[in-house]
Image (cartoon, rainbow, N blue to C red; front, side, top):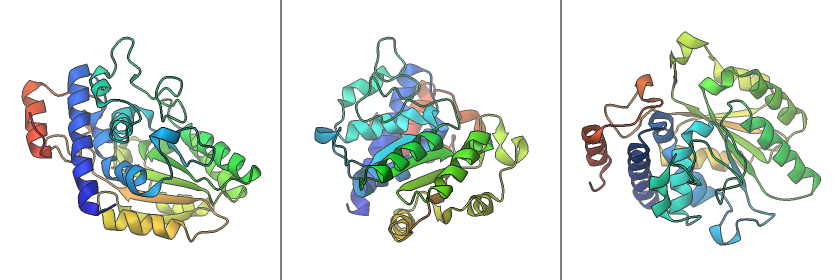
Length: 272
């Protein structure tokens, strides 16, 4: 897909994220907005997946390990016609399918229920190994938060994936430098994060996570890697696209007011 078209889709997704969190008056805008380009590229250019064939055994799988960023995934799935866009404004409402964290039993297109941080890479590694054992050609993609890599379970899964040579597994690290309590380096420093993954036997690619040329190049490089899992460390901006949210840890989990919502929509380029 042309990058101009993906940029247009990304604007719609950002608009949706702001609107749905505003309607819920609850949710996580910062880490949802930072991952927009990554998920847009995955779902509209990279992955073999279709809403009218959602249970195809050969489909690619995506796992949102940082499950609190559900608004970006819900918005992408709605744009891919997995369910009606009208449902987006039911986020976090009673009886809505779209709860605060993804529920695979309720939402079409969700491969795993996530939310307890650290688990997504283990789930993804298991799915990738199953694909190898079953001689399937699907790929597994998992999005991790950088603060999430403070969890020990992530590194157990990293060892497992490397040991089993899961070259059908790609992790993407949403490396925006912030978590709920502030800067990663002040909570628990994760750097040098690239060297850590290399030491665990992964092929590491570093990119600007908002640049489609770099994203495309990274996924093309991924296809050339054999006998190793791949991690794409994507440097991003938390709250990307909304000036007052950008690089502000306080917008990790907070809904905008009426005025803030209107400002955000204008900056994104949507309609009020």
